[in-house]
Length: 104
Image (cartoon, rainbow, N blue to C red):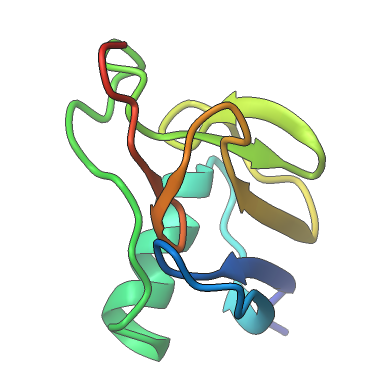
């Protein structure tokens, strides 16, 4: 039997007060990162989900999110169970999990 996790993602757009949490059921695999979860959602369940993808090795810091309430990198944070994913609250949201890091 395939193990699945529930993933809640905070969704919004720049300047909009319309914020919602969307839920997804994702097949879990050992050694799966938060980025792998986002990639699965974007490729399989919801291509409208916006998230940052660049170096994928923890150097650029562009994929910084709030993962279950704590700041972390999507590319290096391993998934053990259900997730709540929100944009990094230090920066303005452009769309969904993508923020404007400005002069970072």
